[in-house]
Amino acid sequence: MDKIKQNPIVKKLGFNRIVLVAVMLVMYFAFCALVPGFFGSAHILGALNYVYFLGFLSLGVTFVIATGGIDFSIGPVMFCCALISGYTLMKFGVPMILCLIFSVLIGFCFGLWNGYLVAYWTVPPFIVSMASMNIAKGLAAVYTKTQSVSWPRSTDPNGWFRNLVMLGKIPMGLIIFLVAAAICSFVLNNTKFGRYILCLGSNREAVRLSGVNTKKWEMFAYVMCGLLVGIAAIFFVGVYTTVQPGYGDQYNNEAIAGCVMGGTSMVGGLASIGGTVIGVLIISLLQEGILALKMTKDVQLIITGIIVIVAVYADVSARRRKN
Image (tube, rainbow, N blue to C red; front, top):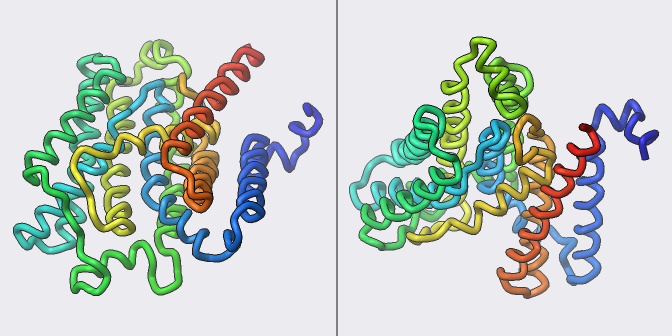
């Protein structure tokens, strides 16, 4: 095994990523064998519909986890962004482009709020994210008067925003997601911002003693997460149209599972955007396969929970061996 890991090609591609791609292919062919017609484009597009918004959630939470923090509010905040901006569009007739920007701004505000509380008030990230989860649900319910919100369909003049998801037969959502992932990878691995984030997760005290403003960079990680969550809301409504208040929790675990499965350490200091992308593809394929097998959503929740435990255990074991 060590010889395989030391192979130049394997080292360049990443052993963990190769294993994840192999797992994804095995899953895909297993579903093809179990479900007649799963090989067709309909199921592939069904899985991609999940990738569009879950991918942005996972990219965002990767930055937070890399600092050693956590954010369990990303799902409800995504719903909050979609509900408030959608209600503003339908109730007050605000132009679509402004509502899309509004969605991103709401995500930004939540990210700024979370980051400020964690970095400057030193409130534990778990507590902050739990509080923000409830605030997001309550705020969306109050603003929309607990009503569900339906975004314009593709046949509506305002439905042009759905071209961001699917332009004819071109999966624009996947292209945009991969471009965003490439940008996030560059930021994380080739900028001062990314290096400080990873260093915060590795040895916060050493970074602080070297004269770095750790509070500022930690807050920026949550701001980045909030921006990506606001974008995720746009792609969610681009796929599913109707949004109901009080939901979104289930996407927290799935986004974190994709992130951790991809090689991002839950204790911080190590993150892989490429791994996150593959992890999201696996979670999305799993979701589509379970639906195709006519199993309930609860089965996916069980499997996702098991994936998180296995991924975290693998991370802890790897760190012990390294130490």
